[in-house]
Every structure is written in C-alpha cells, then in structure tokens.
Length: 318
Image 1 (tube, rainbow, N blue to C red):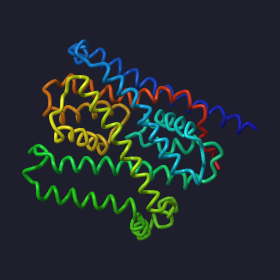
Image 2: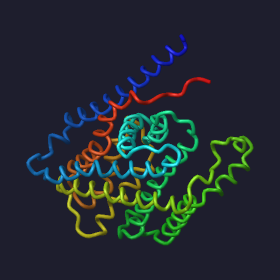
Image 3: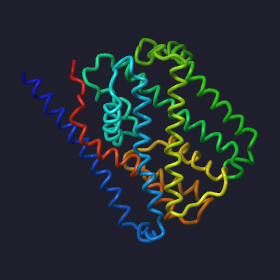
Image 4: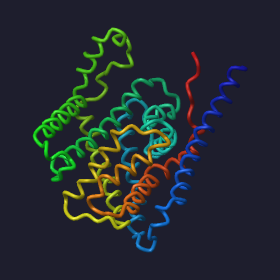
C-alpha cells in the first residue's frame, strides 16, 4: 500500500514538473523576445494580421492530420476516437517540448494511452508515423537544394552533391519500406543481437506505410503553407517557385540539427535568417516570423496540452 501511495505522488510530481517546465520555457522565450531590440524594431502596423489568423486556423488542420495518421497506424493495437488521438497528441507536444528535438513526443503518446499492454508495438507504430514525416521533410528539402540555383547551396559542387542527395533519398525510402536490412545488421552486432526492442517486425504492409506517407505529405503541405503565410505577413515576399522552395530547405535544416529546450528557438531563428536572407534584408521580420510559427504550432498546443498531463501514467518499477 505504501509503495502504491508513493508511486501515486511521484507520478503526480513528475507530471507537475513537466507542466511547469513547459510553461516556464514558453514564458521565458516570449519575455526574452518582447524585451529584445528585435521586437522594438518590428513595425506592428505593417504586419498583415489576417494572414496570421489564417495560419492560426491551420494549426488545427496541421495537428488534426497528425492525429488522423496516428489513429490510422495504431487502429489495430489500440483503437481510439479521432478526438482522443488529437488530445493525446497535444499533450505529447507538451512533454516533448522538454526533450532534445522533441523526441519525447513518441513515447509520451504511448504512455498517455489507457490500459496499454503492447507498448513495443505501439512505439513502433508511432515511430513509423514520425519516420514518414521525417522522410517527407528530408525528401522535400533535398529536392529544394537539388534544384535551387544558388552557390550557397553547393551548386559549385553540383555533381557530387547531387549524387550524395540521390543516394540519401534512395537509402531513406528503402529503409522506410524495407527496414529488415537494419534488423539483419543489428543481429551482427554482439551486444545488440539479443535486444528485441531493436528488431523491426513486419507490423505494417507497404500499402499502410504508403498511406501514412501520403498523410505526412498532406501535413507537410499544411505547415509549409503556414510558414509561407507567416513570412508574407511580416513582409518577407516570394517571387517564384524557386524562392518558395527555400521553406523546404529551412525545414530540412531545422529537422536535422540537434536542439535542446534552451536552444530550439535560437536554432530555428538562425536557420531562418541564413536561408531567407536571400529574399529579404529584414532580419527582424524573418526572426519574428520564425518565432510566430513556433508559437502557433508548438507553444500554443503545448500550453493547452498541460491540462492533459493528468492522464499520463509512468511505468512502475518491476
């Protein structure tokens, strides 16, 4: 009985600390920005707020599409409603916010599910969804670099870079649809060969993975359009498809650069300044657009997700 009571209070304490850390992180980022010279230089009257409002509405479409994809992937293991999937994903964002590259979103969703008995399969299903999204991000980013005509993106080494990009794309796509070569590789490593958690199982058919990939493409189009709207709202304008492709380059860089809770905004802002400096000399507008996109797609859902932390159950000791 004492152990059960201790577990209950420890569980409550952990949930409270996660919620507090997420709230403080968001508050500090906002306070730092509003007190910075960047905000002072921003011309509020020139911002097109109706475009920001459209981007705000697309937040639901963005995470709603992710909820549909996750619900689809776990339907055989833990069938849940779309509303439930959406709520758990929002709470997962809160937990993921305090982990490197927000990787904590994946296990958080699983532990948020009630009465889970097949955690390994659920983690695999959730990972497949995340992998499909990463695959789309990397594919779109590489294609953008491949066709973008600017020496900053290695056009002076076009042949070797394009061959490298092609090999990476083929490797990622093959790994997504045929992951068993990874299993065979793992089995050859002595200290990993007996670890069942590192062995891929045929949980999904190629058709199911393709469906997940299509949903990831649709979601990618949504948050790319959001970024376009936010940048236009702050006066960073695009002239032609090749410049719009820079959005894909920006997402590629931010997805592969390791970030931690204190550096995420700095990394996103720095990447945006580097990539979009070819469109506009207004660094303040570029950084502000990057921050607003983060506020819409991460900070806002994470703040709402704090109220769902009471549902998470951390594993007991065996």
